Image (cartoon, rainbow, N blue to C red; front, side, top):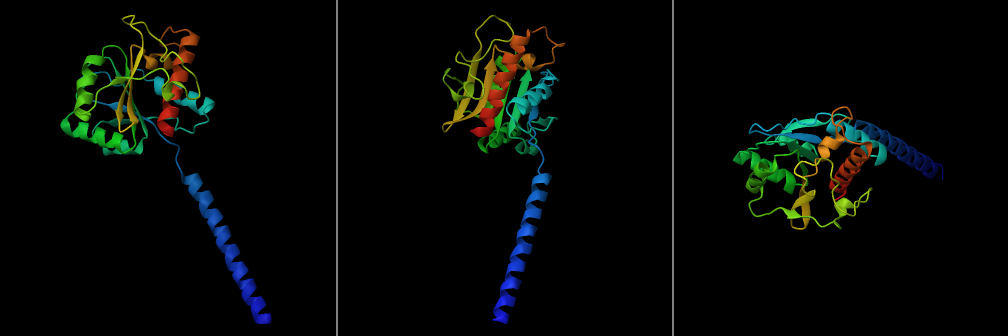
Length: 230
């Protein structure tokens, strides 16, 4: 009986030690995890990929507050052809002018998107004629399609029954949201005649009303939430 009792105590002690070790490892692993970092896409061609420098930090702060995300407060700047793009589940792209992707950059971006990444393109006014042929390099088999107002991207945390909000007038056209969809999955969301990024900028940069800026933040939060959950 004594040997059985000793063996039982030894077994219990070993299990206890292993349990404590597992808890310590789990806690250490959770502390070692870095917050998810989103990225801004840097591209060639002369277009101002760096437009709206305060936009992403403000959007990140809004998402962390209202979506309870834990996004890194600092965004990364990533070139189209850089393999590090795979470290960022969400990439934002903006600008007013020319965009040029090399063949290798187009291939890298395609692999990123097919591998689970998400690209949000925000036309800051004047980008449309340049971005469309470049995205055709990335997905020659796909066409941009306008998303219906019942698409889930408009109905995440915040509800937009009429689609994208109109932040800046530009050509006085209605705002449109286009997508590149591959095998049923939305890979790229392209916001046109809307200018969400200007609405994300700090108040002193653009003379937008508080209402417009809140609308822009809410729609941006929807885009991030959709990208992370689909």
